Length: 60
Image 1 (cartoon, one colour):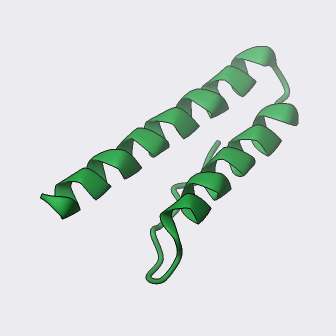
Image 2 (image 1 turned 180 degrees about the vertical axis):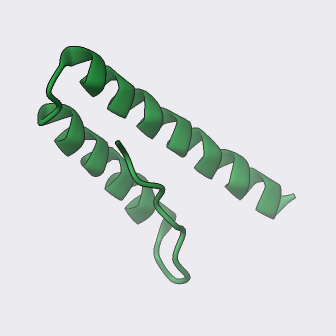
Protein backbone atom coordinates (compact mmCIF):
# COMPACT_ATOMS: atom_id res chain seq x y z
CA UNK A 1 0.00 0.00 0.00
CA UNK A 2 1.00 3.64 0.01
CA UNK A 3 4.04 4.57 2.03
CA UNK A 4 4.01 7.58 4.34
CA UNK A 5 5.78 10.47 2.69
CA UNK A 6 7.93 12.46 5.10
CA UNK A 7 8.03 16.21 4.84
CA UNK A 8 11.65 16.97 4.07
CA UNK A 9 13.29 20.26 4.98
CA UNK A 10 13.47 22.53 1.99
CA UNK A 11 11.07 20.49 -0.11
CA UNK A 12 8.14 22.60 -1.30
CA UNK A 13 4.80 21.43 0.03
CA UNK A 14 3.39 21.16 -3.49
CA UNK A 15 6.18 18.70 -4.23
CA UNK A 16 5.07 16.52 -1.33
CA UNK A 17 1.45 16.63 -2.47
CA UNK A 18 2.50 15.78 -6.03
CA UNK A 19 4.60 12.86 -4.78
CA UNK A 20 1.70 11.45 -2.74
CA UNK A 21 -0.71 11.75 -5.66
CA UNK A 22 1.68 10.25 -8.21
CA UNK A 23 2.54 7.33 -5.94
CA UNK A 24 -1.15 6.65 -5.32
CA UNK A 25 -2.01 6.78 -9.01
CA UNK A 26 0.82 4.44 -9.97
CA UNK A 27 -0.10 2.03 -7.18
CA UNK A 28 -3.79 2.12 -8.04
CA UNK A 29 -3.05 1.53 -11.73
CA UNK A 30 -1.08 -1.62 -10.92
CA UNK A 31 -3.35 -2.91 -8.15
CA UNK A 32 -4.52 -6.48 -8.57
CA UNK A 33 -8.18 -5.69 -7.85
CA UNK A 34 -10.51 -2.73 -8.02
CA UNK A 35 -10.90 -2.84 -4.24
CA UNK A 36 -7.13 -2.68 -3.80
CA UNK A 37 -6.99 0.35 -6.09
CA UNK A 38 -9.74 2.04 -4.09
CA UNK A 39 -7.86 1.28 -0.86
CA UNK A 40 -4.66 2.84 -2.25
CA UNK A 41 -6.49 5.98 -3.32
CA UNK A 42 -8.27 6.18 0.04
CA UNK A 43 -4.97 5.91 1.88
CA UNK A 44 -3.56 8.72 -0.26
CA UNK A 45 -6.50 10.93 0.67
CA UNK A 46 -5.90 10.19 4.34
CA UNK A 47 -2.21 11.01 3.93
CA UNK A 48 -3.10 14.32 2.29
CA UNK A 49 -5.51 15.05 5.13
CA UNK A 50 -2.73 14.37 7.68
CA UNK A 51 -0.46 16.73 5.75
CA UNK A 52 -3.05 19.51 5.85
CA UNK A 53 -3.67 18.99 9.57
CA UNK A 54 0.07 18.98 10.27
CA UNK A 55 0.59 22.18 8.30
CA UNK A 56 -2.37 23.78 10.03
CA UNK A 57 -1.04 22.85 13.47
CA UNK A 58 2.44 24.18 12.62
CA UNK A 59 1.07 27.54 11.50
CA UNK A 60 -1.08 28.12 14.60
